Length: 402
Image (tube, rainbow, N blue to C red; front, side):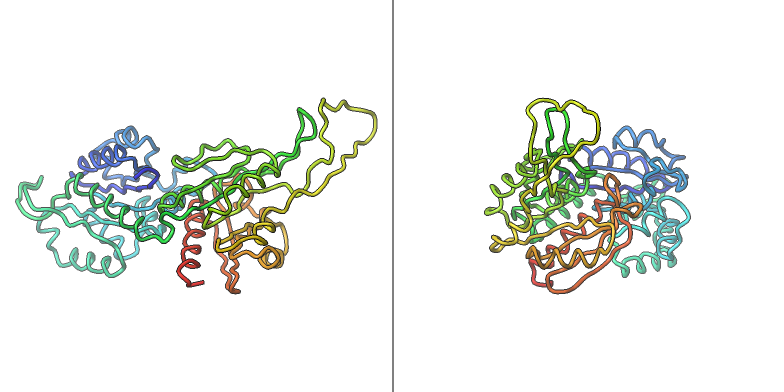
């Protein structure tokens, strides 16, 4: 279960203590867990408890933006692979069924596209109330899943149905869900080759030419491909990022090294996603010793590097080949030309001059163009969400839907 992201939404009921145990057990299983609490939930258990167990910030206030680079409830909504509402009070069930978003939990629940599981916990008569039943039925029709409460002794003194399901059972359900999801993905056991980050082209022992790529997009793609059961090869230029666990990781520096590494693994790859920003030119002469400054201007002659993507398009057999187009103008024109001339199955294009879509950001704004002529443009999303989107579209190609 390593690498799977669980967003736990905790609402105000005495069963919050079980959510503490649930958080601990999920972390022990290897899940990444982030917690959002309602104000009333924090009256039962301190947010510090969840922070200590999850090793992540706990969110309560919609207007408390801990990271100014992202909008917290959107970032969390995009980050999650699965959202669990436990305990879910009658209040939050009613709000969600009627599209009300007046706190951090409900705004995030309305913003996420991840599956949402609701684990009710309340008095037996509340659970049996017609309004609550009606709201549960509405949410079920909207596609929400429910973890039925168990029967037993309730905190209010009643005996009946309304107890939050035991943490061990919830964890087992989550594990089963991800196991089945991985087994049903057509990427399972496929070999996915991802390139990421910049390249560096040496001038002398102390200087080089490079670009602004940080590798964040490629690393997220590698992480999401792992989550789908793929065998992932990540070839990366110099970055400050930590590669996802369980990938075959190859560190390179120059465009030539990138070319050689990609060619080494290309024949055995099923899918190749070229998200790296590879230099188009390199200095023709690399000096053995440091260049000393002189009076006047300096000219350096450059030569072309190998066009890796074009070469892959020329020699590919059954591989699905995905390219990236980082542009500042005429996005569609350049992307479609690249799609055609490099024999790609799909290209992901973005305008790197737009706020939220450039190098080094945690978000992206992309358009995707396909070999069959289809195209789609998307609003600003986290790079994690974009990675999921890209892999979902690749799955469609494999299944013959594109």
